[in-house]
Image 1 (cartoon, protein in one colour):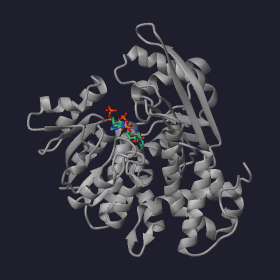
Image 2 (cartoon, rainbow, N blue to C red):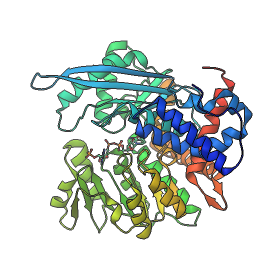
Image 3 (cartoon, rainbow, N blue to C red):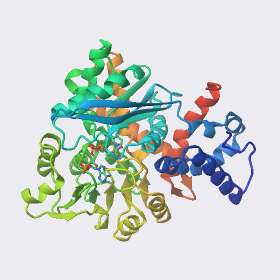
Length: 460
Ligand code: NDP
């Protein structure tokens, strides 16, 4: 079925009609995939005027094609828990686009994983990867497996069972998975070990590997550091920097941890971290000594963030709450999708927040995004602000194929340069009456390269 209208029509009302019509048809083709619809809607709102104004895009039906994955792989994952009980999970890989490079994107292990969530993440990944300027297509995968509370041996057996099917669909020139929620260094190690056993190949098929066996320096830090660099670039448009600012961070996983570290190193004060059970508030700031304790808690002991207040007596725990009700200058949502709703956004703006840099993917609901844009604050959407992780993954692929290793300083310099160029592209494409709309900028800059490649490569 054709989704985009064949001819350009003018006027704001007509444009609305085109967007609504496209979304209705697209939603009918992917029923129930609400997160995917949300992600597509955000991009289509930004790029429909461009698509309608460019004959080559209309004729090639670029939008119709971009919302259909090139391939979806779904499989059964069967493994045995420590009690010898058989466990059954669902495994997925959504290979969305290989237009500008091999499929690239993380694996998520979380009970909320389903096809719609992974299609949203894969769709976002296409434009994010395009923004990095590196040759990477877009994909995402994962499972509804929950690593929380599982022993290392159970996680290993699950990873081995998952890779026993996935390995035939991936490779250094075809599809290169990485980590995401629930998939960190431990899981990448088990997945890589099984990939190697099955293929008899040591190559760069997975990124996020340990730095001693093929990983890149600074990959664990890259998403968080990059997100803070992006915030720094946004602040610099107002002659400011993170120094001396108060920041809220959500989450306490990989992205949150290194967001806090970089903010500390740049002289900001971070007063919150969270997990899905609640938020800790430390008015004195979560300095790097306290952060080292959090890293041990989360990455080694695999505990819960509420334990922070037992250890650091001045801190408070807000059970069941997110951080967004507190006064701050900067906010870094770094946990999961849709973690900021309209009320949270209003509260943030009312309490003085004027810069939001998204470490998580699509953490702000559409109504929250509207609040930020209407308030004209500095709002960096995830596909731009959190692209540092996949950018350093791209550098890891590059190092693996060249059998070489870059120093920490070298990778950091490249990460800074890539985040800076993403920011410049957002500014270039996001101008709106003197205001930089980073959503428009990121969507358009990411889209143009993919759409042009689609036109150049013919029907596929
Ligand atoms: P981790 O698994 O390391 O940490 C996730 C954190 O978010 C945990 O604190 C977790 O708490 C919390 N969280 C997860 N789900 C929910 C939920 N439904 N409600 C509230 N809190 C939740 O993941 P990452 O740090 O790697 O990923 C965080 C975000 O960043 C995700 O949106 C991911 O897609 C995005 N991202 C990650 C990149 C990377 O390089 N890792 C790259 C780009 C984006 P709990 O322990 O209670 O589940």
